[in-house]
Image 1 (cartoon, rainbow, N blue to C red):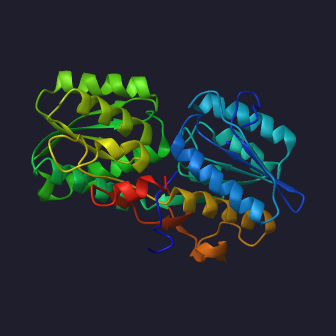
Image 2 (cartoon, rainbow, N blue to C red):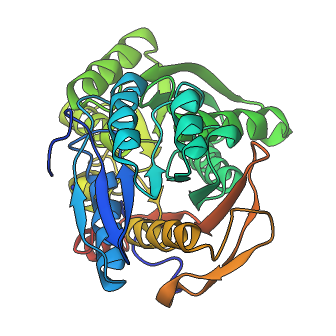
Amino acid sequence: MNKKLVSALLCGTMVLSASAAMVSAEGEKIALVGKSAGNAFFEIAADSFVEAAEAEGATVDVVYPEAATADAQIKVLDNLISQQPDAICISANDVNALQAKLEEAMDAGIKVSSFDSAPNADSRQIFVNQAGTVAVGQALIDAVYDIAGGEGQWAVLSATSQAANQNAWIDAMKTIMEGDEKYANLELVEVAYGDDEPQKSTDQTAALLDKYPDLKVICAPTTVGIAAAAKYLQDNGSACKLTGLGLPSEMLEYTGADDEHSCPYFYLWDMQGLGKLSAYATLALVKGDITGALDETFTAGDLGEYTITEADDKGTEIVLGLPLEFNSDNIEEMAKLY
C-alpha cells in the first residue's frame, strides 16, 4: 500500500483544562492544540505527532481543551502565548473565532501551523490537510448516491456547526450535488449537529428518523457521530443506512453490505501519517526550511517529499493523500491497525 495511503487514523497534562502537546526540538518548543478530549481520531494522529517529534530529538507532552469549542481553545492559546513556544499547530474548532489569538501568536514571533481542521488563511502559515476537500466531498456524495440507489432523502450528521473541516466537506458535497444532474433525485433534508458527543449524536440520529420516516441514508463525516449513529441504526433495525468518516475499530461490528449491518462502507485516511506529516511540517517551519509559501517543497521523513499548494480558502496547505474506503472486505484487517 502506498505509504501516503496507509491505514487511516486519527495526549495528558492539564493546562487550564486545555489541549496542547509541548514539543522541544533542539531547544525549541512546539504546541499541538487539539479540539477536545476523548476523540480517538485525534489521539492517534497526536501519538504519531509525538513519535515523529521524538525521533527528531523532541520531547512531547499532550493535553486537551475542556470542550470542543472556540472559547476553550482560546484559553489554551492565551496560556501558550504567555509561554512563548516557537510554534503552535492547531486543529481548529472554529474557522474565524481564533483569528485574533493566532494573529497575536504570529505577531509575537510564534510560527502557526494547523492540521485536520484549519483556521482561516489569515490565522495560519500552513495547513496540513488529511485529504483534499473536494476529494472527500466527492467520495461521500458518491457513497450516499450509491447506498440510496440514486434517489431519495438523505441527511448529514455533523460535529459542531462551526467545525471548519466538517463544513468544508458538507459544502463540497452540496456543490457537487447541485452541479451534476446525476444527483438530481437526491434530497438533502437536514444537516444535524451532534457536537462530537456520543449521546447527542445518538439523540440527533433518533430525531432524524422521527422527522423523516423515508430517510434512506445518513452521512456522518465525524468519527464520533458515525459510531453513535451506526449503533443506534443497527440496534433499532432501521432501514436507513449510514456512511461517512470513521475508525475501522469503532465501526467493525456495524459494517457490511447486508440488512444486518447499518453501514455498507465508509471512509477515512491515514491518521498516523497525518500526525507525522504535521510534526515534520511544523518542525520545518520552526527550522526555517519552509515559510508556508506556495510551491515550497520539503522532505517529511520517510513520508517523502511534499509540495505546498493553494488551499480552497486561498491560504496554503500540504495534502497528505486520498480518502480510503473501508468495507466488509478490508475492515477486519484495518480494525487491527486503528
